[in-house]
Length: 200
Image (cartoon, rainbow, N blue to C red; front, side):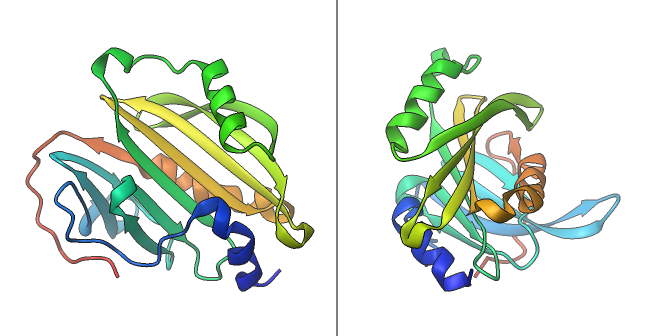
């Protein structure tokens, strides 16, 4: 499957962004150098929403863009075979509680009416337990696509991760998604940081 066919299959499903927005007052995406003991200096991405900061490590050579109007980050692999979305939404403190799995399942079915839920399972991010759903569906040209959507409530925020690739390669590529979620951290508000550059 060519990269272009993958993009065509996912276009309406993912609504991919193609430009990085820096000018929005409420949300900003930039990068900084972070020292990780086992890896040395690496480039981490920082998503700043109002005074709140979220950091993550993107897979090497992936394109990282920001759709500021939806507080959404889009990551696209170099060969266009994989896509990851990160949604960040503020929620009232009163709803910052364990996820209700049945409500999430209902939400998934409403959003992806043509998809089949293959399985669901607990998952972890920033030392918090969330819940994930694996979906399968038939896209254009009868291409089988798989997605994993993971939900977390962390510190007054709903964090949603969405990974999509072809069903044929889903298992072998899932580690890219797991590694990104494992790197994702919610930082205290108003932490001063020196920006080393901005993503392109």
